[in-house]
Image (cartoon, rainbow, N blue to C red; front, side, top):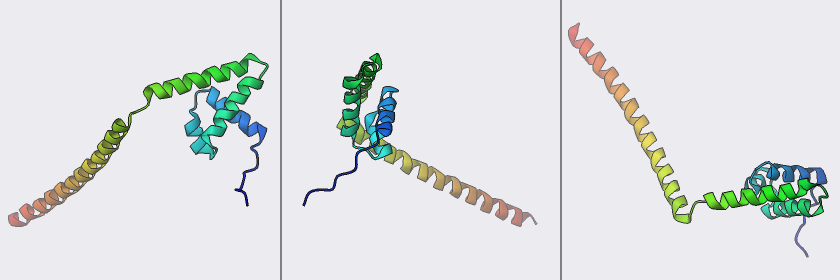
Length: 121
């Protein structure tokens, strides 16, 4: 018994994905958004560049390479990703604490206001 294979994607769909890559979208993002493997997207972009008789095909490949280079240049290291996750978690914790303190302050202010008004009258 072999593994299940997906039916091939429609040519129009593949072309739209290639055009999105050419417009600057990252294959990894498109992969998640459209539930297509990133490798398939890379293959489609390469095929579009090889098979296109128009200069547009080479433009797609150049755009893809430029985007890939930019992503690699700006990619975070593993330690930077860990630090970013840690800092985001810390920010969420501090925001939660701030909200709790803000509510407590409002509650105590309201209670203090009632107490001081009660002693006057």
